[in-house]
Length: 89
Image (tube, rainbow, N blue to C red; front, side, top):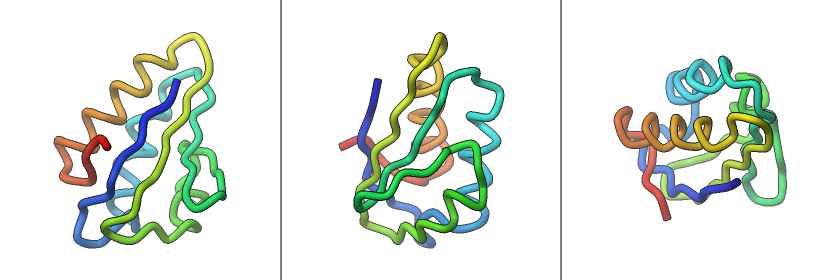
């Protein structure tokens, strides 16, 4: 399962926004990946997410595989909107 988002946070996916996403998906059993410009990192890794340096206005894809993949993607969508990080494309 996957969804694409446009990052709307004024700082992109830097420290605080990355921490919010990582904390939100860590409880899920599924493998959750963030893809940006051909690079893929584990969304449960704060260093991995921050290493991508995703700026405002860019598009990222979140992919989840596993028993709770649908719930994990729903949580990402909820956080993107409620925290002002991004919007679905």
